[in-house]
Length: 330
Image (cartoon, rainbow, N blue to C red):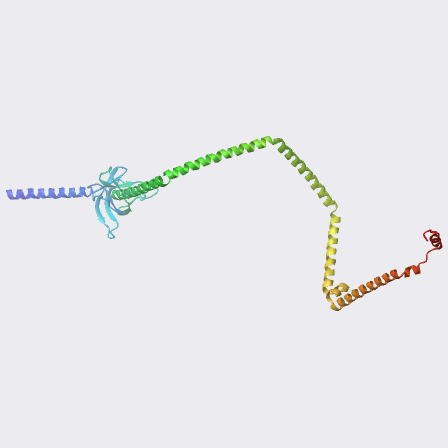
């Protein structure tokens, strides 16, 4: 065997070894394992959030697989991460998948949180898993910055409000007015206390009079009760009489209404006098004639009295004549 053939064989074995080493390195870098059973999953994330293409997949702190590729979806709104999971680790379909960080500033990995519900099935090879939105530190910092800016504006507004209170409410004039108001309140309180004391003294000094008045009111109330009872019995006893009187009043009212209706209609003498002008004229003439006759009789009587006709009709007795003849005056 010559030296050239030996060198060729050695070169061939070295190249094969280097190729095998490169394949092993690529396999391990992508998470592939040789001679170990695995299955593949595609995890859809809203954002990769700094996740590396070779990130670990961990469940309860134990590495169960690795990411093999990281691909942006055509819509540009989600990321697909292909992972290789060891076959001995089964993941249920209701497990929570999200991006987590090792420590505060460590590398990011895919965290799988098992669910307490064990009735769900397991993911099969090639299944698509939708993960939760990862925690974004930058977004959190921006939110905190916004909150700090709002807090700063709030502090400025609060300081402005406090200054306004100091200049308006807590000014010397306002404090003086408050002091005057408090003095007036104290005076009013003292006056009210004095009035209350006076009322108390008045009631205490006139307690016998008030007691007597209350006793009289009680006695009067009892008398009123007795009167009410008597009136109730009186009304109950004379209810038929009262009903009859009310009925008589109703009948009388009806009669008066009938008379008024007859007068209004011109019935009877009075109705005729009210409505018939001829009867009114005749009644007036009759009253005039009666007045004239009365005047004539009065004149006739006066004349008889003056002319002595009554003496002619009336003659004095004989005894009266003798007495007159014996009278010395005659």
